[in-house]
Length: 246
Ligand SMILES: C[S@@+](CC[C@H](N)C(=O)[O-])C[C@H]1O[C@@H](n2cnc3c(N)ncnc32)[C@H](O)[C@@H]1O
Image (cartoon, rainbow, N blue to C red; front, side, top):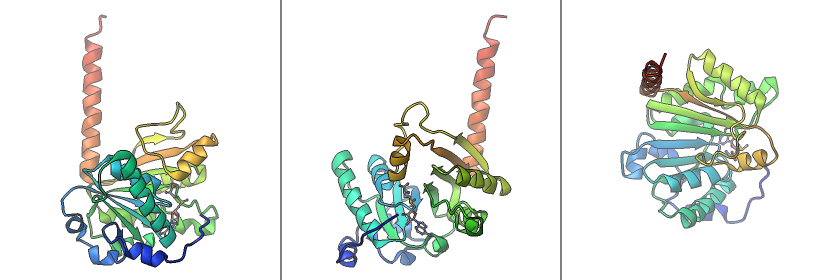
């Protein structure tokens, strides 16, 4: 992502402590306290300009959200987007925090089991094999996510990159992680208006590129609930079948 930084950016970030967390390490194990409630915490890793996390947090005031990126300028743009999205959708900013931080050190800002969901949206594909360990769905990263997610933990992943998607499917499979809602062309039947789109997603899908998506069930309760839901669907289908005339 090409960025042109603005002067006074540090001051701009310091001026909004209710939204921008400049020392996230201090919140490790205390994010619920920081939000002032026990609601689930969902995090987007690599939020870019912040469209997705801003809209999602405005639409879901009952969930807490944290957007992370490694550039000050993106955090500043994200803070503008967050305010714009409140003008459109209403609500306040109390369920959103923006953090400039390197995802590689995730365990320095989150305690074990502190998060309910991680969003990975259009993560850099790092196509060269020698850079595979930098991909955010490398098994070493997934292991980190497993640490900070709780028993209901899920990872939701979207990308336009077929090679990154294939790589990611293998990473999850190698770690024995159950997947659901796998799609190779998310918007094939028209834009999915039930899901908030990211900046990259909007751009790529307008160009006709297929978007790949999956959900990974990390926490045991998330997995159990999914299995029970499937069993319920099977039972309902069997009941319906038995009611059919021979
Ligand atoms: C391709 S952009 C996608 C932005 C956004 N999620 C979207 O879908 O529009 C990837 C983003 O991840 C961020 N990023 C990549 N590696 C990172 C890291 N190690 N720590 C924090 N942010 C990172 C980049 O700065 C960039 O903003």
